[in-house]
Length: 246
Image 1: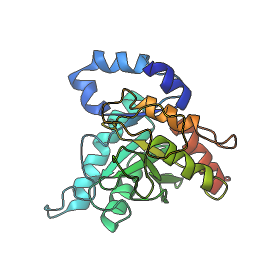
Image 2: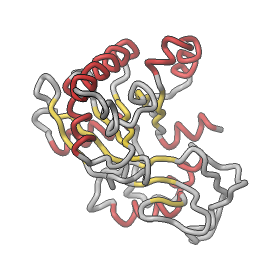
Image 3: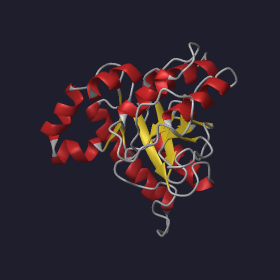
């Protein structure tokens, strides 16, 4: 069921590939071999790291970031992972966050793009796309999460909520916002609902979560909305904004 749902909704998966390649290489290979072409593997930042807070107590934060960036880049090249995921504690668009994006991109010329998530709210960047040149002068996008599928019980929040709530927001905005990334909260459970009530899917004991929740969201899309793999979305974004360079 999980594999069927991930095929249908083009799920992307965050992995600490650099750590797993050393600690559990067989398990990492097993996971890799289970993915379909519609799935994207994301290197999760070289570990659970808030990059806007990274090395903030050191005397030279930029130097520490460059060391980290080169280590992550080496592991990503070894595993042929082209998408980097970065986590921000306070503000995905802050100066410190942008400093980290810039250094990570400058030290990894194999990157296709970066996806970034803010700790609270997950969609703190509201879909904003930032651009930084890699060492070859090629503009690379940093794409912030626009929506988040999350069970908040008796309410939905700004850009975060049930699968149907998120689908309705995408349906409404798709003509003005051609690209949207959606983060699925791993610990939110839902149930099937045949009503238009945007809260009816919330169920803390429901058996639908993860890729299944993404499938519920996709089921409610209009015909002009299409799901693609994260890598394809990144290349579409690059082609849209920088066609000549792309």
